[in-house]
Length: 463
Ligand code: BGC
Image 1 (spheres, rainbow, N blue to C red):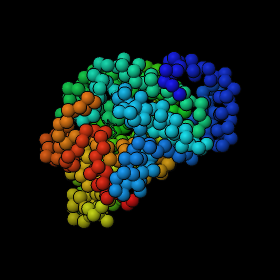
Image 2: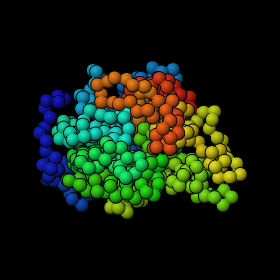
Image 3: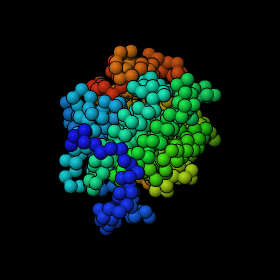
Image 4: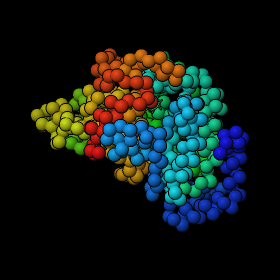
């Protein structure tokens, strides 16, 4: 398929064209015959299946797979599905001779072999991207919302629309990591505010961009939008929880977006928080002191991402999202196996000894996020693993760096964030703890062999 043949931009027209199409009716009948979907009340809009991961394979990115297989021991996991990141406009066509979006989609259709397949694409190029950090600053300046729409989202949507009628292809679109939660937690008057996040709140371009992505991609019948919802160690505190859900609701009803454009939310993308802490829960008390008051938990309502995702799902439904939304958890790097992993609960002498001895999360502080030393691969990608959870997914491809550990000049817009520098200690967002990052790290998104090796060695479940 040639990109020059893309149909002109036509999202609303396309929707109404389907309204009278015989194909639409036939497709809906086929799906409901299989018990996979209910026909929508609007006979014109194709019904999506409730959980796109159920009964489907997930696309294996051949480029990541080749890099993983080239590492010693890496072939054991090289056929796992990972996210395909559209992290700049040029990624749509392919960077440095690599695969572009259309190449990946053609390959996904080939991998499907007549069965349903989920293609996981990450939408990650907002104006003023990564406003509270530097390692993943992007190419678009804070005001470049028009370029985001016309040179990025519209182009991606036009390509995806060419595959809309493929009955086996389900596109899982992860929408804009680390954007909206920053507008709650890293803006004035909070002590963690940055001028960049204040700017993105004031100019409205995160909300505008996310709502545009939702409505454009949501108009394509086989696209399933999952909005990034941070992780338990960010949104799990009372001050952030309800306010984030409200902002997501406002964004999903801004412009032309509606809550029907949202299949669900993803938590822990590219982060390291455990899926389930097996040896302690938030409801326990030690000698009368609740776990919630331990130094590690620090009044959070959650100790892990699965309980957070399930609780936040309820909150999102109560703010107006559909009751059948599903959650994804990125389990690519949150396994925390290896020799330092506890094998049972800690001593019940006092609450801190208990939590410190129990927690499998090996970080120095739950606010640490860059190339964490000691981390391991987490649960392998799995459909419908728990109530309210559509899938465990590997969106961050293991082996790709979170950021450079020292300054590296580049033309990707990436900055140097000292949270990726192992010698750094001085960020209020992790309470001025050491960063816990590995040394000798390349730019974010670049291959980091030493980290891949550590993730393999510390995998839990083991590889
Ligand atoms: C980087 C992106 C990269 C992604 C996946 C992000 O941190 O900024 O460039 O594509 O990680 O590795």
